[in-house]
Amino acid sequence: MMYVLIISSSIILFSALYYIFKAIIVAMKSLFESSRELYVNEADKLLLSNIKIPVSIIIPPSENYETLKRRIELSLEINHPMFQLIVLLKKNTDLLNRLMTDFDLVKLEAVYKMVLKSANVLHTYRSTSDKRLTVIIADTLDTASAINLGFDVAMYPFVCLLSEEYIPSKDLLLVLEPPVISNEGINYGSITSATSYENTTVSRYFVKTIYAYSNMFSFSIPSDFAILLKKRFLTEQKGLLKGEDIPSFLRRMMKRDLRLIFTQETGFSAERKGIFFTFITHHLRNIICGHKLSPLAVLLNNLYYISFAVLNVILFYLLFFGGQSISMILVSAIVIFVVVPLKDIMILISEGFIKRRAENPHISRAILLSIFKQFGIEQVISIVFIIFSLKRFFGFRGVG
Image 1 (cartoon, rainbow, N blue to C red):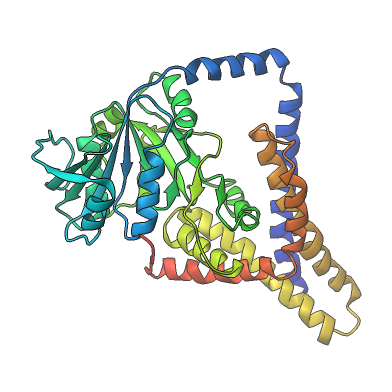
Image 2: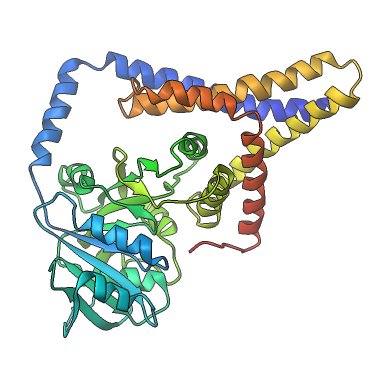
C-alpha cells in the first residue's frame, strides 16, 4: 500500500507543481510587460475592430430544433456589416417545415461551384424576411460531407463554423476577426469558446480545469466553440474527411501548419436542464466521446483521476481499518484536500493572467468552489471520466 500511495501522490504532486511553476512564469511576464506595449496592443485591436471582411457563418446539421432555432435567431443579430448565414440539414430531415414557417423560407433554384468532395445539394431555401439566411438540404447523412458542402457554397473569404451546441453573441465576429485579419497567411485562424453555461454557471469552474490540465499535454478543443478560418485554406486542404468530426479535423489541420489563435470567450453553451451532476455527466461525455480531448490527453487525465481515486480508497481504508498509520493518513489527506485544490487554483490564476483578467472577481469564488469540489464532486468527476474513457477506448463514441 505504501508504494501505491507514493506513486499516486507523485502523479498528483507533479500536476500541482507544474501549474505553480506555470502560474509564476505567466504572472512575471504579465507584471514586467510595459504599459506602452499594452497601449499598442489595445490600439491595434481598436484599429482592427474597424476593419471588416465578409464572413460566411455555417451552422452544421442539428437534431434539436429549439436549439437550432435559437442559434439562427442570435446569429442573425451578430454585429457585422456583411455576412451570410448558411444552415445545413441532412436529407430526410424533419426540421425543414418548422424552419420554413418560423423564418419565411422559399425554395430557390441555385447552382454552386463545387470544389471539395462534398455532398450534392438537394434543395436550397432562402428567407424572405432576412435574405442573409440560406438553408441547404445536403444529399447525405454524413455530417462531415454536409459541412464540406457549406464550405463549397460559402460566398465570402472568411468562414465561421459553429459547433453543434454553440450559441453566438452579438460580438462573435468582433472577437474572431482581428487576429485573422492581422495575419496575412492563409493558415491563420481563430477560435472562441462559450463564456458560460446557462443556468449552470457554477459548474463551468469545475469542468474548466479538465481542459486546462489537458492543454498541458496536447491541443484540446473547448466544449462549445466557434472557429474562423480562411476559405482558401479550407479548399486547399480539401475540408473534412468522410466521417471526421470537427475536433479531429482541427488537430489534423494543425499538423498541416494551421495556426489557431485562442481569443477571449464569447457566446453561450446550449442550455442544459437538470441537476448539477446531470450537467457534469453530459459535459464529460461530450468532451471525451466527442473527441474534444486528444487520445494523449484522455490517457493522462485517466492517470491523474485513477491516482486521485486510489488515494481516496487508501484514505478511507486507513481511517476505518488501518490501525495507527497516522503518517499515511496525513499524506493521503494532504494530497486530496490541499494539493488537488492547489492545482485547480493555479490553473484558474494562470488562465486569468493569460487572458489579462486576473482581477476577475470570480477568481475568489472559483477558489472556494475548487476546495469545495474535493468533498464529493471531484470523486464523481474522476469515476465518470474513467467510465467514458473506457467507452471511447472500446469504440462507443456516443457523440457526433
